[in-house]
Image (tube, rainbow, N blue to C red; front, side, top):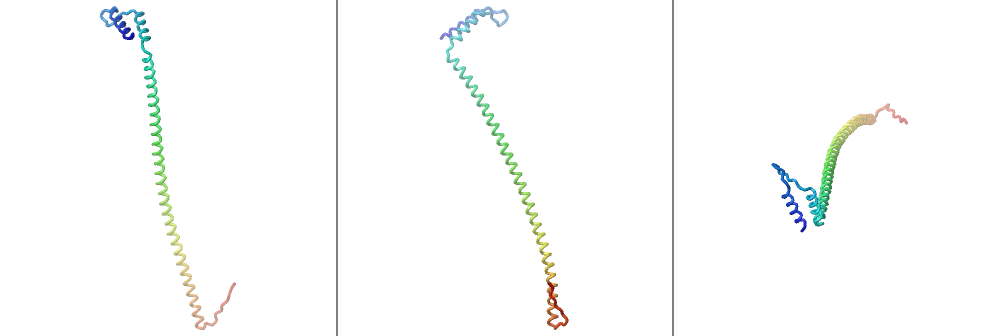
Length: 157
C-alpha cells in the first residue's frame, strides 16, 4: 500500500534532517514534507474518510440521544413533582373536608340538643298550662256536680 511507503519516506526525511545542536529539534525541507503529507492524504482509501464521517455522525446521534434523555428525565421529574403537589393538595383538601365535617357534626349535635331543650321547655310549659286548665275544668265539673248555683256560662264568638 502506498500509504506505508509514504510514511517510510517521511521517517527517512526526518532522519536525514539537520539536527539543531543541544536540542531535540530537526531542520527539514518544508516543501518535501508538505509534498509527502499531500501524497499521503491522497493515498488514503476513501473508507477512512467514510469511517471518519460515520464516527462524527455517531457522535452527533449520541449527543442528540443524550439531550433527549435529559429532556425525558427532566419531564419525568416535573411530572413527579406535579403528582406530589396534587397529592399534597388532595391530602390538604381531605383534611379540610374532615375538619368541616367534624364542625358540621358538632354544630348539628349542638342544634339538636338546643332544639330538644327548647321542645322540652315548651312541652313542660304546655303541660303546666294544661294541668292548670285541667284543674280549672275539674273544679268546674265538681262545682256543677255539687249543684253550683249562680254559674253563668256564656259563649263568646
